[in-house]
Length: 242
Ligand SMILES: Nc1ncnc2c1ncn2[C@@H]1O[C@H](COP(=O)(O)OP(=O)(O)OP(=O)(O)O)[C@@H](O)[C@H]1O
Ligand SMILES: [Mg+2]
Image (tube, rainbow, N blue to C red; front, side, top):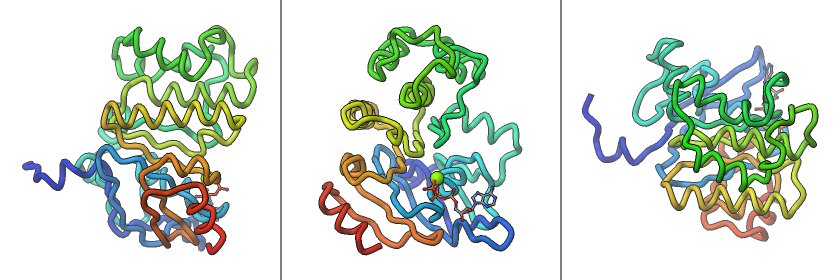
């Protein structure tokens, strides 16, 4: 397959993606391209389809209709095994409900994607990620021995440790105090700027969304607006009218 310049400039693209659950159209014909190295925030009311959008865009879930391409590859045409491998190699995912493995300690959880992929840990990067999410002194703790915010930060470290091309983060600062949230957002922003990683982040917080290059607004399973160069006040103002 030949790659055009456009194909390589796009990290993930969705074409007329619909995901229904019985009568519910959780995503309703969404067409969007996330360009490489971009940081996009996704906002919208509860139930507007944000998590469904991320599940479909990341290959975790299959759309009912439409096409999803990751790095130019139509993932609908891949076998389950190949789709899983592509996800493991290229995608980092921070789940809204963390999804940590209860029987594993923090370090085992964070390095799990490396073990699954048969990749040796880059110790320096692992230590930096752990330090920057503030978990260096919690590595031997199990998730049940952590606060909600610490579990959230472990889930984030797990998504970053493989240096994925694209990170999807579903409300990764929802359980954090404002200062810790700011530290996490700064880490994400710096990772995007330094590595050209693509980041898609769901948030309900205008201050968090303002770290992004642009903000997408979802309503009723559709993209209803985009706001470039967001500030906390411009995001809050747009949110008011949603
Ligand atoms: N597994 C499922 N089975 C049935 N309906 C679902 C399922 N997952 C999501 N939905 C429905 O799809 C719609 C979108 O859900 P989704 O989780 O994407 O919303 P969201 O924007 O992430 O909301 P929140 O801000 O509360 O996390 C909702 O109406 C929800 O009830
Ligand atoms: Mg959600």
